[in-house]
Amino acid sequence: MTRTEITYLIPEKDDGRTVAQVLRSRGFSRHLITQVKYRMNGLMLDGERVRTNVRVRPGQSLRADLSGQQENEHILPVHLPIRIAYEDEDILVADKPAAMPVHPSQGNYDNTLANALAYVFAQRGEPFVCRAIGRLDRDTTGLVLFAKHELSGCLLSDAMKRRAIRREYYAVCTGELPEQGTIDAPIARVDGSTIAREVDFARGEHAVTHFWRERFENGYSLARVQLETGRTHQIRVHMKYIGHPLPGDFLYCPGDKVINRQALHSHRLTFAHPITGAQIRLESPLPDDMKRIFER
Image (cartoon, rainbow, N blue to C red; front, side, top):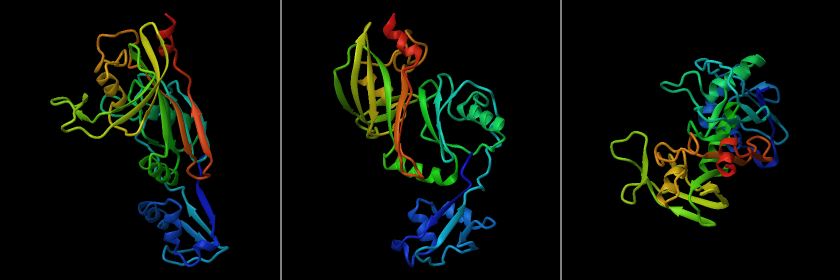
């Protein structure tokens, strides 16, 4: 089920604040407040419909309607193999397989993670209104976080901007990595390419990657990787830059076919729950195709 409303008991510290100020302090964007206030009984104070400029008193009950988000009707429900790692009425975390984009795009209308989740919701008889918070490349596997309603979307988007959502990857790299390291090298689009990126100190955007080697076998290293920044292809570009590209990466290591995709997996997500504030820590194990590189 998805949360359809939220109620706040007004504390002493909010005495005299307007309804809009109270909601803004709880993470509502101005756009969301505008949407909610025009819904039938969208904002209720002690059971009475209220405007956003009304001032509140301690002990009052303020309810906001979260049920009006428009369903993603253009996303075709398709039965595809995915695992839901966590779900409650506010958020969902899916464990994405390889060869699956997160969102539909040109040439990918019915093979995405969104299609798979739309099918899950259709089977339940529920509207599909989820929004991805962050994304993974088509062939990067692992955990993807979704907001199930507008308020959790606002709060999680803000957490992303503050870098309060921590994601850790497993990456298989060619050669023997140092035990640990930090790569601080700006990344730019390769001239003449719409996809490829490269380290470019003249025109690149700031990018920082931290890594820790977990094992080295068969000529490959397994690393845990954390990002300070979120540039396109950051891990793939940075590992190539230090001479340890990811096998299977058709852009940055095209000659290594030990695996048929870039060997990259989003294995851990750590964040504060957007509504309850509880710490959430989720993990996804190393996929079989990445394990096999070390078991040959």
